Length: 381
Image 1 (cartoon, rainbow, N blue to C red):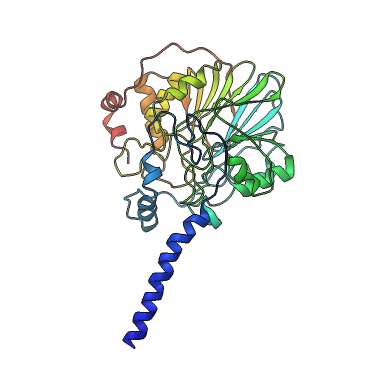
Image 2 (spheres, helix red, strand yellow):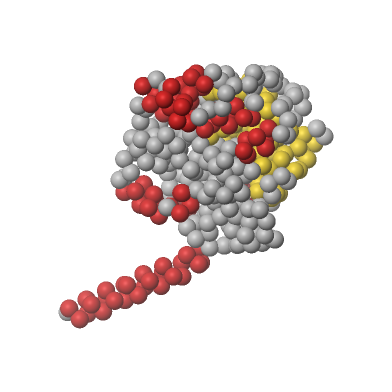
């Protein structure tokens, strides 16, 4: 009996070793093949500022703590009710309307175009239908979504690149889908074509409107083994009357990517992530995502006249409380003297004012600004 049990355990160990050897290679994929460059070594992409992201190397430990609930995260509400308003079909000329759908998904309407960022309508964000579940339904029901002309996909993480949603959009509307290098290979798995560009690449939408793929600071992966096989990016949509900047998903890095985006012209609307910025209780920032403090500095560097904080309150990805991002953002912008940057209710269309140049303000130093925050803001979970 003992010998049989020992044989079974030996086979289990052998099978596990084989799985650990074979499966990662099976799950790895070469999404892009091209010449080496300033952020590609011929195999994988990397951040051009030389600062690599701690989450890229500690995903297994983070995932274990996340799944076992041992990461000390505050509890979120199981469901958050919303009161959405049906969007217009089109917005003509230089008028602009933005509607936050949830997480990093925003519908921007202007110049007769309907532009959608990182569209995710799935109930969960992860492979095989697993992963964090939405705590609120999308701010626009898919059936009430107007015809989409342009889709921006920032990178290949499941909470930003949702193949099921992209397939639905392509089948219904055949939009122009713009992304960065390698992500087109992932999107093609759903039978959907897209245009993949390197940082600095441009594509015309119509006369006077073009999309520029710009640098940010992040990492990519669909599985554990395919780390950084596809590039991550932000976007500038160049428009008459002022540009739209969509930061995608980004950590701070050296923050000069914000200055580079501003060089393409005045930013009328900045869509900036403010959530999932704590990966341990009490953290004020992480290398993977900008939180309210760094987002305020990005907004300042952009010189944007209006900013909307996104990437919060939809999927429970990190260690801050549900409403910490908007509350902390409000405190930071008040202390820093920044106007025009805040959050909007899900599903409530917001009319974006014409571009107005802001008066320059002092750079936001992370340590200094934390010291100036009210005690209540510093104590936010």
